[in-house]
Length: 461
Image 1 (cartoon, rainbow, N blue to C red):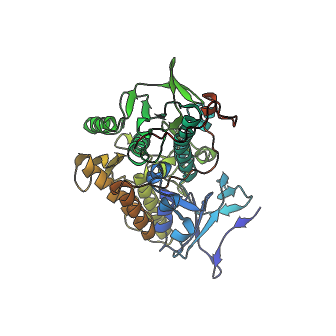
Image 2: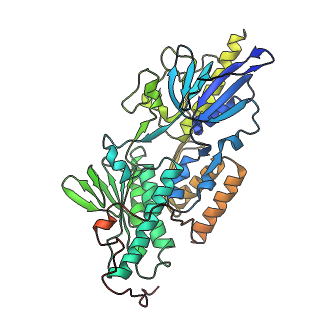
Image 3: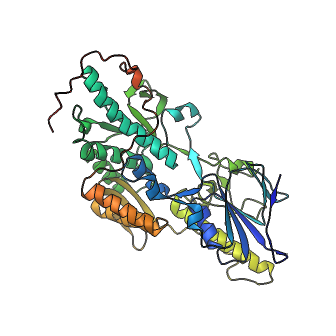
């Protein structure tokens, strides 16, 4: 086992270890750039992903490179930081060590854990292969593969048999991710793909949201929930609230005793915290989030800071949501707090040394489709927007927060090309050419088609 530490000029500086290169981890790292500390950031991937735009990759509007950038590139000008592509598997809190998957150990004086969350299938982990969620670039490209492949297989089967299964897409969960996925699927089917196929009509695709609670976008005000519902229905999306999914199988889902056929099923119904929280041996909530105090510290560990989705932070009687905006603010706070603690250790009283974390909520936004969105603004003024104004605000905000100028330019150009010009996005299918359940509907096993291929009778466009 190797212990990694740094000594400069014969004097060991304070070492900060950051686990996770998401919003919380990156903001903590950048906040430490001017402090007399040595920083090690560990992530199992070499890139930071701008998660709010993952669904745009999943539905072929953007490419993965538009919303992801190597962590080393982002932090290349920060001289007091090193980046390790590895994964934390445990801790020795008494010795202040992080145990890594490769067998190495990292010493720390301060530890920032911002490893985020993953999908929760509420104990039905077997559903994961049948209904992928959306947390990573790999998830996004898998969803893209399935959605685009459904149309391709339908076109092929129409040629072989003269019919194809109904193009029903089911999204489980009516939160922001579910709403965004459903609206985008409807958009690409009706606006961008209809003219490209000769034997099927993609615009007949049916998208359905199954939401267990009485409302979609449950965290939004009632008027914006109604606006979102109206915009989704205008896109042809069917909404089923109070619909509790009881089973997911290849090619269909069950809501109670009702079977709902689905060529593609997507999961947007629940998340659970990174398993690292439980490995700390401290109190966690039912989702695995670490219970922290006002300084983002677990009990009896002022040297450890929990940020982002992994932190259970209460403010004004409510839990701070596990989304990008609070994660960034937590990372900023952790860095500032470490700076104050270092100042105290050198005999300085510091300014605001006991100031706890306070989340400044600027509002929420969810895009629904081309030029359609809802926005619950709380800063710089309070307002409820919907339709094109909300979509324009959403576009500006998301471009502004992208890491790197090149990404901003690329994303803006891709959006302009796709949304304004109604042009093709990044419609690439990679990987397997099979869909769960499709082969049970008709014989696609490679046997000769049941009738000659009718290549001379495309539908009129």
